[in-house]
Image (cartoon, rainbow, N blue to C red; front, side):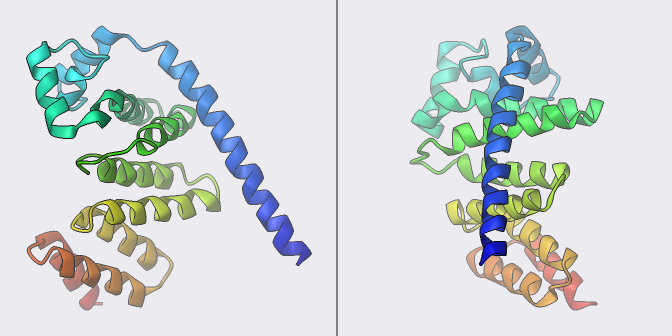
Length: 206
C-alpha cells in the first residue's frame, strides 16, 4: 500500500513538473516568434497552409473564413498547433528537447477546446503522442504517448496512423497479440486502409 501511494505521488509530481516546464518553455519560445517568420515557413512548406489563415497569419479575410467554415470555432485556437509544429521543426534542426517539450503545452491547449466538427483534434492527439515518443525521457512519456494515440482513435475511429502507432508500441513491448488486435480493430472501422492491411501482413509473416 505504501509503495502504491509513493508511486501515485511520484506520478502526480511528474505531471505537475511537466505542466510547469511546458508553460515556462512555451512562454519563452512564443516570445521569440515573429509573424512574418511563420508566414515565410508556410510559403516554403515548413508549416501547413492553414497556419497562414490563423490569427498569427496574414491571409486575406476570405481565406481565413474558408478555414473557419471548415474547422468551426476551434480554428480560433489552431495557431497553437502551428506553434507546436514549428517547435518540432526547430527540434529537428537543433535537437533541443526543451523546445520539443514546450510543444506539449500547445497541443494540450487546443485539445482542451471543443471540436464539434471533429476535423483536427484527432490529428493533434496523434501528433502529441509522436512528440512524447520522441522525448522518451522517462516511462511516463511513453504512457502518455499511448493515451494520446488512443484519444486519437476515440476522436476518429478510422484514423489508421493512430492504430499503427499503438500497434508498434505493443510490438516494442513484445505483445504481438495486442499489436495484431488493435490493427484488426482499426481495419473493422476502416476496411479500405492499405496501411492497416500492410501492417497486419507484416506481423503475420513473423
